[in-house]
Length: 206
Length: 203
Image 1 (tube, rainbow over the protein chains, first blue to last red):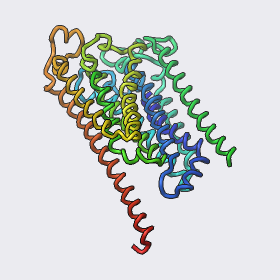
Image 2 (cartoon, each protein chain N blue to C red):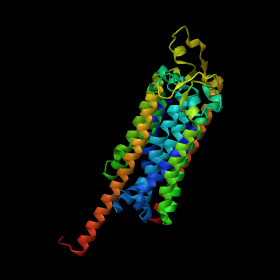
Image 3 (cartoon, rainbow over the protein chains, first blue to last red):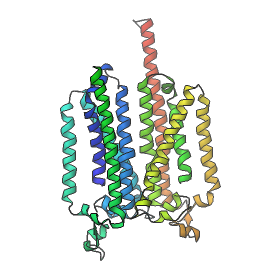
Image 4 (tube, rainbow over the protein chains, first blue to last red):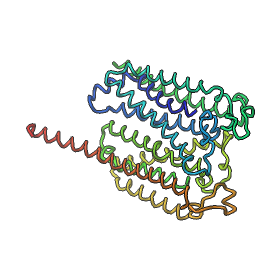
């Protein structure tokens, strides 16, 4: 979902910084002032995760099921093909927003970590997660129904009754969604394990 | 168009290597990590959105009117999966361009980097010329193109959008190229300053 994907990139970047905080802090202290190699290593990971995990997953669902992917907030997402240059920009903006959110999460997280404001790090991404959950829940039952903007909002002679429930695998949606979630969870687990392993080897050495 | 997206992404990777050659020739891991992150950031932020703009807005034109499957990708898990491929076709070549360029620089073959991106630019020109019939004629679907129901590349709104994303990509590449060069000059300037100070601490 657009409403989840953009904050998710921000949260994952901050979460990475939080997981690797001991190692990042030590490396930052070694090179006071200048950014250490570990800054760029974590930046690379954050951008890679945003650009290769969250963005493709989001754009995949946006391309296949544009109404559901933005929980029927805007009809323009369903009218991309040959409808002018403005609507076609929406997927491009979506990708850019995900990458930018990942970048901002990294920069802000790192800045707080090295400037003694680490106490803000965890509450920030937890609050963002809670806010995203509230936004999605407030749109109940949009995330449980697959169809079009007009169907969801009962417009142009179409009704919500015509929409299918997500667990009935309408138009292959459920299969696609499960595939995307597996991809995301495996990638996230790999990221977490990699950072933890790095941290443990640092703790072992020190 | 997908046919030129790959060489353009390779060109961007090589051009960024060229701009950061002094960093990549040195042995400071910070500078290598910096360049690697910049290339990835550039690829996902400035390259990838462009093919998606065309693929979801003008899909038949974007795939050079080769197939008809792309005319309706809604409600199909298989067709929509091409989104993943587009990410690989844009970020992949840019990163490969970076790795190859870096390899050449480290082997003291700087000229190959220059030849590489000039060759890619020439290749783009050749592809556009060779496919001019499909490049400069826009149709909404494969069937309409076959039926010769198309309009000119230069007519709005297609041309407006094309101009916008072209300025976005090439403008970003130009700015990023000179930003990296400036950053290197600043670093080298500081190094020179410290060298002078080391010789004459009062200077």
